[in-house]
Image 1 (tube, one colour):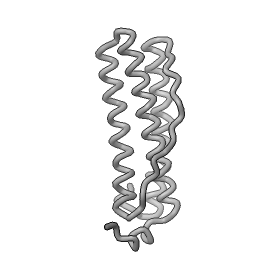
Image 2 (image 1 turned 90 degrees about the vertical axis):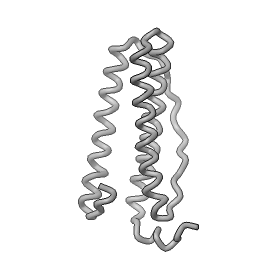
Image 3 (image 1 turned 45 degrees about the vertical axis):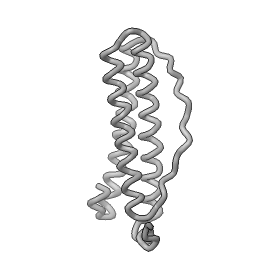
Length: 125
């Protein structure tokens, strides 16, 4: 049974940031899965496998945030995700959209890392 006293050691802001991280990582996974399926349907079999790998990696990232919260006795949210359109103009379009998405996610991760350094939470960092 989780130790409910442990949840007193983690700040609400940290919890909120990690809940957001879970949502963003799961959404990223859905985006890349959509791209993978489109690629496979269009005959880009090896590219489809690569984007499926990216999708799986994003779920691993969400899992890390979940485990971190659970280690403090905090129940992670199961977020509602936005529908992904699944419509692409071609492989170059997918590459551009993936790159743009990764830039946004990297900014979010940098904000989380900076916050972790500020509060001196090496495990979060």
